Length: 496
Image (cartoon, rainbow, N blue to C red; front, top):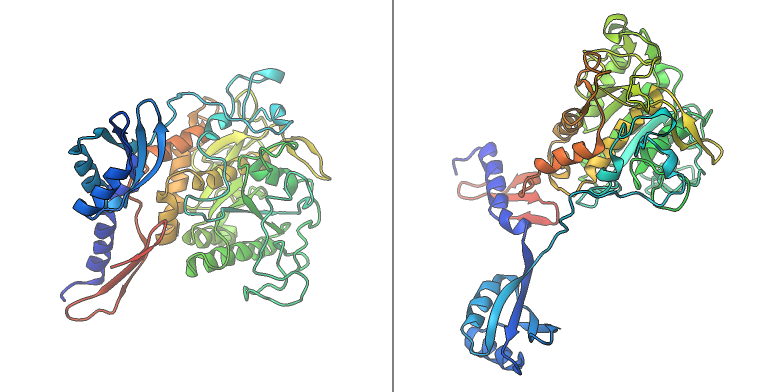
């Protein structure tokens, strides 16, 4: 058999895409609506269908008495044969498939029932308190498409936060904080063999334990709240993701701690990739709301290289630029001037859609803006409050990364399983390519714009294919005359 490995894997794609029309059905497979003549019942039809066609349909229910319309179920591979036969029967008036319907509203506002949502102007800005109407993330439109939590394939979406500590008992965070359920807490054993003992709640690099309260919660708590405070739970506020899992790693204050924290995140995603989702965690991004003013990448090669290592496994790094009014292209900053394609650097905007006065910029290194001046979210000690700084703009972009993976299109998760690095770069392109132009960021950021959650999701929707690519393709048992091809799809495991 004169085929190389590349040719065999290409055949996998061809086999899968042959079934693409069925993946986006316009009707419910195997269901037909049949209008019978007045007074007629399905039983004679069912008997003759078996006698003449060897088909065994089932009359599920009468859906309209006046018109004598019945819903029939039949094996999907026999639906056309059954439908054609029905059209020739004297007691049948009309036959059609049970078509799917969709809402045709062009404008939807979806807001959660959290009582303090009205104070979160970053989601819906009505112009109060000196703000500019619509200077916001268009969250109420985005939430009509996705609210976070799971991928279309059922993977739990995880966003890592590295910070000083978090209020792990906060009522709006407790349900969305990641847990390592492969670990038995407190037994002093590395149950999942990931190199960490009792890392049930995450990791604390200061103590070598899983106490994610860390050394202080005043910064990491609002950062986490912006990404994923529980939404629509009738309590407090909401995050960009109503549901998500926040993998909190308590660490910071120096590069050694940061690199150790990155290593925990990296190991978790690598185990997930290597086990096809059976171990580890599907970490799609890591938030970095800290840095070194005037830092130079040449002085921190290990720090900058970490972003490429994370990116190779499918993890985007989202970093806040400096809180000083300087051009980082000229004076430097770490980590936002690190030369990695897998890094997104963020500056801060006010509720008037202006760059915050104390926020840095850089046409070459700062990618976009997000809202970071007096944003309202979860705070320490179970409370809530307003917080300012680029530290609170970056997690809005981190939240966007996680939200995108929950959108109802299977292509991204399929790519994440076959080529995780490419999936991460696609997410970055979707975020940067869908920004809203902003005159205060023009010439001061790579995109000249600010984050727009709704436009990001619409951009992804416009690129969604009816035929998501297969993943985990394998060529087995190659002989001179045959080969066994195995691959995975979103809903099942197939082989030819």
